[in-house]
Image 1 (cartoon, rainbow, N blue to C red):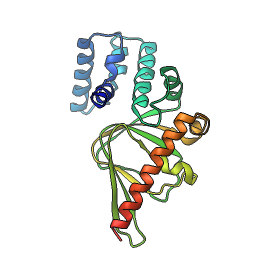
Image 2 (cartoon, rainbow, N blue to C red):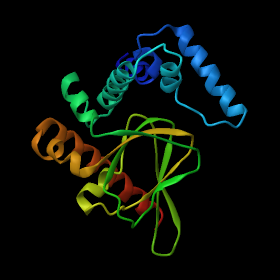
Image 3 (cartoon, rainbow, N blue to C red):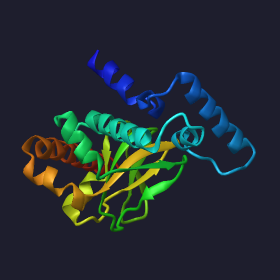
Length: 209
């Protein structure tokens, strides 16, 4: 039951956080679809609702903060934080949407960023010394991505590509240092994820020798 509840909470769309009717949200979604079909610039649901006068900019900002906090609260690394702490943490993150089959983390490159996958699925893989591609794992919501680089000065130890269209939250490591090093319950959860990912990577590498 806990797992089912978590998935339902993660599935909440931004419109559910806004002080507006479902009909207004559906109308905004229709306008978005029409713009896409006509090849026009596609605006977000929130921006469309602001233009139609259904909500204010402040309404949208508050809704985004609440949705972001809920999403981060489902991530095992941050699940122990209170609602107030999650809203504060969320100010360090931004939303990113990527299409399917897009590589956004490259092995060996420097990218001091932590991601949290909130929708879709990604594949983690490595290239060995012979140039052989080795599948490590598929990652689904609401797992963190890129946590290994935190202990490698931002250097990526594996590559990650999207399998489906995905939605991510991203934040620089530098803005999360306080939580990883000074908030014990977050630090322990973070280390548990890192340990699990290291063991999974080592197992996959041994299988492919």
